[in-house]
Image 1 (cartoon, helix red, strand yellow):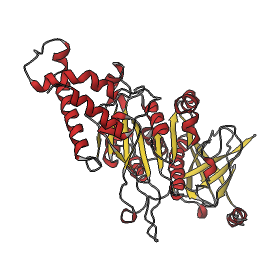
Image 2 (cartoon, one colour; image 1 turned 90 degrees about the horizontal axis):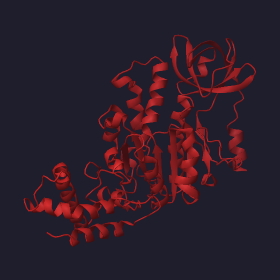
Image 3 (tube, helix red, strand yellow; image 1 turned 180 degrees about the vertical axis):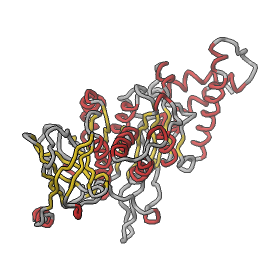
Image 4 (cartoon, one colour; image 1 turned 30 degrees about the vertical axis):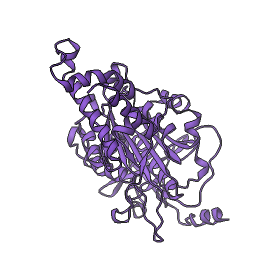
Length: 445
């Protein structure tokens, strides 16, 4: 009955329409019905001998609205009817969505039948909770990955970025987190992913065990920029729904860079000027709005707290340049960063995390004194070995010249084995610290 009442309340007796005035590349110019249009409004455009195509208002030019379609513009003719939708973009999820795969509109694409709709509507472009109404980050979260558990210990409600070039192993790392992290539900956003890799990621990399407690949102690289951008908004909206059910949510998005590229395409088409490396100003406006939606849940008026959204967002660094504009902007917004390097992957160590360049901003507050000492000693040893690595490899370093470097050389093989982990393995937080402590205590001083 509640669902029926909600459906009736959504009905709008007034139908407003406009007409196509021109089509310029990705933009469709509309005339008429401007009183019901605003930036972000949705519309449906009739096509000749084709199904209508959904579109979104991205701007205005004089007395015309500028719309971008969510699909192909073939069949759109001058004077074609544009039916304006009164409601903004929203989704009505339920817990039955867990284990399912949806597109940017929340429609199922896994062939398992329709999805049951929830009662409450969640806007796709919701505002983040206000800063003063948010809880603080919670206790530390067991991610199941040794390198991250020890060197970038993560708290519940924290947001981390995974920075890497293409082919370094970001997707495999995300699958390890989706399967092994200590949480109630996982929301995975595959933004601009290769179509070939989607089923591989879901069936092989994520697996049946990981999918059982996950909702996967997919928008492949061949889909329009609006769909790729909306898939990112959909990912956060679903995470917010699960958070409001008092569930601890892990939100994984691959990748924020492709979200930024989609926003750049939309901005350039709407007439925005390109700025840093061709990115438009709205890219850097939208990034914090998206990323800030993850984090600790808001405190309710009765004093209870909504569940946290722990976010891990991958950033595809252009040409392995970790200081390119998107990487630089995202690093300043998030609560820490994981750096994955091609050189480490090329020598066969996975996950290819450079622990010396990675940092969690909640450390060392979430570690005990003993754990902090273990991490300090390990970093000291890894840094000493990295500084002298070239000399050690060519045999130019003479044993006994520096006790710290001698210890680092003795520790290095065991530490490398510790940092390397099979995708199907999981190691708890306590076992991770105990394993590294045993390595450090077993080496000569």
